[in-house]
Length: 180
Image (cartoon, rainbow, N blue to C red; front, side, top):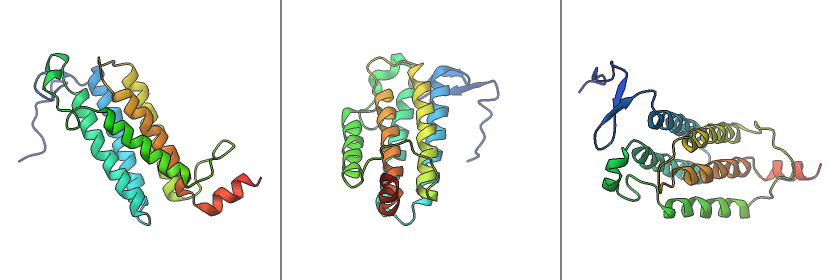
């Protein structure tokens, strides 16, 4: 199988469950931003080799983004074909992110000042991923999907990446930062 199909040479792309739209259309803009977020999360995961916990969490989130992108890439008239948790975002997926945020937050002292990213490669990569996720969220807000949880999921994901970055900074840094 070849990677190229030539189907998009006319400036359109196929959607989940059928249909074609311009590559500059709203759902494709949203999915492009989410694709960038997924790649940034993958880069952060590649940096987290010393933390199996973070690496596994990042992989789970990257897989969630496939679900989110399937939902976004479905025409409104085909949304009834989506399967919760497999091709559409669920409350349970958001709840899982909140549990992870709460679990990591319980292990760290929250900063009392603005953060300057770059304490170490893992936290820096997570902060980059957070900003890319925030951009995806801003893009998704402009493409409302009735009854969708895409925007809340992305909002929670940006909170999770911020929390993971603070956790990845390590206990030595947290102690030094809060003593200033």
